[in-house]
Amino acid sequence: MPKLTLTPRHRYLARFHPKRVPHMFADVLILGAGIAGVRAALEVDPSLRVVVVTKDRIDLSNSAWAQGGIAGVLDPSDRIEDHAADTISTGAGLCDEAIVSAVVEAAPQLIRELESYGAIFDQIDGHIALTMEGGHSHPRVAHALGDATGKEVMRALINTIRGVETVEIWEQTFTIDLLTCEGACRGALVWNADHGKTFVWAKQTILATGGAGRLYRETTNPDIATADGHAAAFRAGAELRDMEMMQFHPTVLYIAGSSRHLISEAVRGEGAHLVDSTGHRFMGDYDERLELAPRDVVSRAITSRMEETRHPCVYLDLRHIDREKVSHRFPNIGQVCREFGLDLAHDLIPVRPGAHYMIGGLTIDDKGRTTLPGLWAAGEATSSGLHGANRLASNSLLEGLYFGRFCGLHASEDAVSVGDEYQILPLESAWEEAGAEDDELNLSDLQNSLSSIMWRNVGIRRDAQGLQQAARQVDFWDRYVSSREFDSVEGWELQNMLLTARLMIASADQRTESRGVHYRSDFPEMDADQAAHVSIVSADAE
Image (cartoon, rainbow, N blue to C red):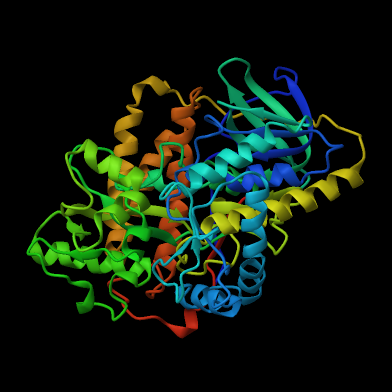
């Protein structure tokens, strides 16, 4: 596939002069405090100063919201080769088989390591309890607190990192841009309400900023998932790939007027059925694996069924499952349902798909090194080769742990080799006044409009006409929004989302086939000649 280029409106979102901005120094700067960022921090040499920057509280991340669990071969009757085969099969021809093998082989150790940090997994007869999820050939998903695995894992990791004296955690701090000079990353420009803009110069920088779910009207992601790392890295000159690959989770609680809540894949893994508004269990009409087919298959089946029945949702049916089992296994989901007057074990639960996991991101190698020297990346902000064109359920926390560890280890080694010489570089960002004030824009309305057109035209089903319409509209918004300089997180987030949307649309238009989570109704079949990544770089970097 040819490499795409696209031009960002500005290299930096904010203007600055090095004589007017305070300077801080770190050996290793980590942007993001989800599972990948925190695990990276724990791997850095204790002789180095580490700064972890997170734009909200450290306990708020996509990782902390993860419900299902972490996949790994812990049952003697299971095989690592089968976990790898399931991952590769789900990835629809775009997985890096060497990466898959390495990650799934490390999975049991990584899960045991979490126990050593204090994470408490659910147990059966003194062993970690394992469940089935879609796409897996064997029960191999370890879970905690029933259906709040991410919350428990992040509790243990955060408690551990808070005890490391050489790690500083900067909460409520937004990363505006990566700083680059002479083709290498030198740190980041960050902002918080107390200190304003700050240069953080770093010998090595690790980007672990998470996903992009808020680009879509229907999403399981928290409000922080605005693709900030994807956009900042692109502006800095790093290569991104697979940006057309957004995974949609099939089952998001659908209550009109409420925020969306994920209904874990594990609910179907424990035997829940999907039925339509007539009560028909429909997955057999689409795939022999029924409710345990991969997420892209189930999401498209649900969408088709909603259209055929002209009903806004389908339903999860757990009525045939023992009530006590439902209550024990899914306490948090049950509580969310009760808030809307629904009994998880007794009522039909309304669900529909929502944007869930960004598969595309920074191109990285097997150590987490990006194409931009001095910059490493891990987790949902990357394209590592593990997921291919569709992520296997419960491989996401696993990926964050694996690449977070490698990024921390190797960035640490490179930082040690640099020595203690820091240099304040004469970087300056300036451009002409746009002639318009940012308070003329209704940022919420713009974000809602963006998420609506992405859902309609760049969602579960796509075609050339819809993609071209989205490209024209998003480019129009981006032209006048990005001509302004904002001094608020909301403004910077919108600029990042518009740029990332442009990257996603261009990549989706380039892939004229259907593969994994990318479904083109005008090209509904997989094309063997397109079994390759779509890469995209800034035209300025080229």
